[in-house]
Length: 194
Image (spheres, rainbow, N blue to C red):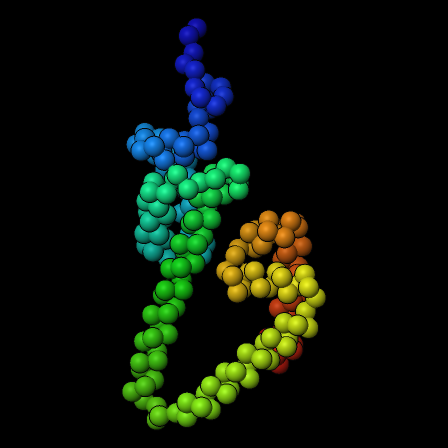
């Protein structure tokens, strides 16, 4: 029997995702088609988990795959697997979409409130905001170092729990526990009801 020889392993396996990204970086349309087939499902699943809206999820998935085509040369195998790189692009794009939608909603809400509310005392607003920031900083200082790192990475830098776990080199379960305990302590410190 004559078997076809493929780069990267047995005949049925073909090139792996990392090798395919290398080919995509050189403009190989067939390689991109194979990357697309391999990652489309996982990317859509991740994006849908963040966005919860099927139509927007499909749109963002397409944007991510276009970004993979355009930026495949930026993939660095030394920093992680090809799938991790692509899913990181997807997570960031989905989070950006959520933030953009939230910002638009906030702008609309502020515009509506301006029509309904009397002028406010800007100095009072600034003082209250500064006091709130100081209270949050004080409460963050009350966390353990591990809790503070986890909360800061997840909520201020926007990393996913798995990314926090990788960055801190600890198990995912440990990160989740640190975040839960840290958020409970912050809630109690800030006097926010559950």
